[in-house]
Length: 309
Image 1: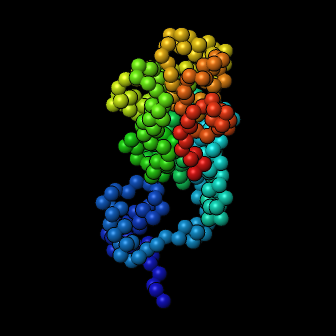
Image 2 (image 1 turned 30 degrees about the vertical axis):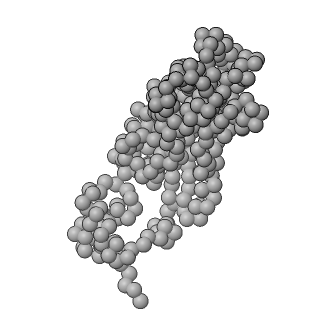
Image 3 (image 1 turned 45 degrees about the vertical axis):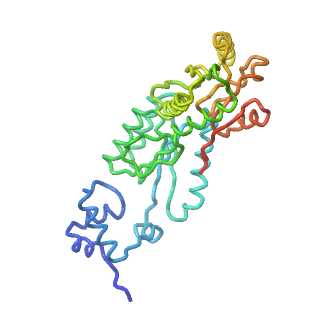
């Protein structure tokens, strides 16, 4: 029978404390890279393979993951990531995993901070969230790093962030793809618009990266002018219709619009009659309203990340 390996055996062989081995095994608290490597080498030598179920039963405790998500009652797109976490929970709950939800206002960085402070009062075993606000997202990641909380970010990538992983789109390449799709319908001398139906765009790194990819594509394929407009009051249909009617007058060569997030349907709702015949629209995400307009021929292309997965 194979001899049972104890934490203190691993610690003695690696030349570290039992507390260090415990922190490495359970990925919590601070451990220097040198100490972590020593422990991992010993674990590799003895063929250690951690069994999550056995570990959970031995410690007689749940693994509590907090999902900090935008309120999907405000924006239907966010129901998809929420659904994904629910599907994952159904397959993991027998392993002692539970998910605790905190919802923040998609348009309020201060509310994000409040919800972040609240969840840190009772630190979870892991955190999942989309860093939609760049400054505030970095703040939460740094707080979790200090507290030894593993983090996975979704939807929006922050380069260089100390997280376990990022799951989501490459925003820059999404913008490039959107430009390529629109380019099929454009002629030299025509104009395309990047339309950001978003609040506080300067803090939304994923949208800015999409625009950068979009512009870079047309910079390499000259002959098409790119203009940009940010429109924060996108839920005001009357105002949006007036705004876009004015743009059609001001931009006589406007032939295409790239809506940089899931709200392309807002634009279609407000298009003046007959405008849809010559304005090509590329949007993002397979929310129901977008799909309906895609099937009706009022949106030409939708770029989609699989937000449930």
